[in-house]
Amino acid sequence: MSLANKILLFFVILGAINIIILLIIRSKSQLVKREEKSKNKCSDIKILNYDDEDLICKVDNDLQWQYGYGCTDENVLNKMKKTHRNIYTLLWFETEMNSGGLGEYLFDYSNITMTYIEEALQDIEAYDLLENYKKAMEENNILEGISRINKRNVEEYSLFMSEFDFSIFDKSYSQSSLRKLMANYIRENIVDFSDLSEEELRILKEMEIENYE
Image (cartoon, rainbow, N blue to C red; front, side, top):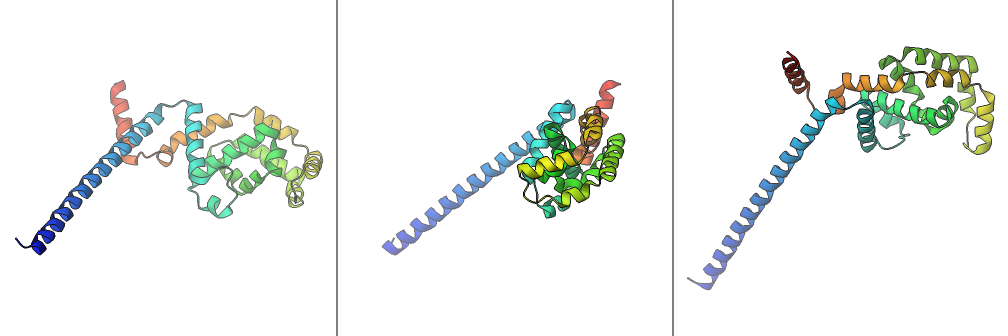
């Protein structure tokens, strides 16, 4: 065999080896992806048995990972899946309420979600809180006060908080079951908050009923 043919044969063999290696890598990669998908599916099945706090915590982490913490991009908020936006809005609302009440929510950057807060409260069936929120907004003419917020410094904050009476709403919030309603809403729309499909959820529910019979 001539030297040229030997060299050609060498590169042919080398090419074949590279192809085999690539196929092995691809096969392993697909296996890892299938295993990862299987793990995620198992995790999503477990979510059906989470208590309220674990469920909300998981969804909170997932939404922050997907959209970021305290998203102030109106375009992103507008394009969110409605169920996601409802919970994202309410979680931010809840954080600000626990920090400083309604005044804190309306003064801070969180007020970018005001466009969606009423819809979110309506969808989770927090009707009393929704009515109290509407009343607080109308009676205090808060939108005008918000329009004057510019620097968000200590002076503006003190002026804003002293200009309006948020105590009635804050009290109604403290007596509400917002977190429970949020958890119920997530469960009702669990397909939007997990990788479970409608069909998989239907089968799981049927299996659960059979186990109880």
